[in-house]
Length: 345
Image (tube, rainbow, N blue to C red; front, top):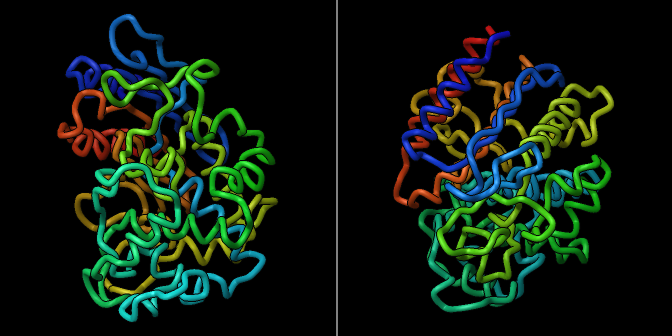
């Protein structure tokens, strides 16, 4: 199969300074059909991107760390996703009393999308929880859909209260290490031990780009995970195996419930932790089936999984290194995904 078109697309984007480095992995039915590694971790004079290069996965942390933690917990206790958050947080304001993990996983809690908490300095988790729970709701819980980092910060806190381990400890022990991915998916990577794509001029390698994540010490439920293309792809392949029931890593019934659209609002594309393709303007392009799941990340990363066709497409870049207001990646992603699917069809 000739994947030169993908090479040309990425090399053209490099020439246009859309990012300094990129990694692509395409698989079908668990077979890797294409891997491509391009450019450097931070421009001229820096190391070349290889299959070992770690990228800041930004909001893919939600899909590859926080959501798997919740799938594992829900497999043991299916009712946990529908408990009200007063079960974990004392003195919850009345307007938030009805919020459940299901609402937060589906981005239907009513919590705001984002707040610049980092402006207040370093936070511990309890301080961050208090700030989030004091926010006015944008809409009544379950009556709208606004993509929210804040909900996933609370979800990570609940993981720690339930398990005694942070997301950064629970996800490796329960997911990455059993899958042999302890060097491919990790929090707080060391620049001395790994080659890491840079995301902001002057920052040392391995520091998370997300500033709220930094204010929490680099580990949160919404951002903080670093990974290789292989690490992202293998986890995605385990989602597929588990959905089909053929010796998958995750409980089949539980992961199926997470991959269905939540249904709080008819127009909302969100499943539990995952996104699904929208009818127009999806980052997945126009050729992924409606029974697909995926997600993007602010740093220029994405993962899309076509469940019926068992196709996984991983795209990792450091587009924010060229400037956080440069959003050409939004145009590039669907073009790339359309090209992949045309080849496979």
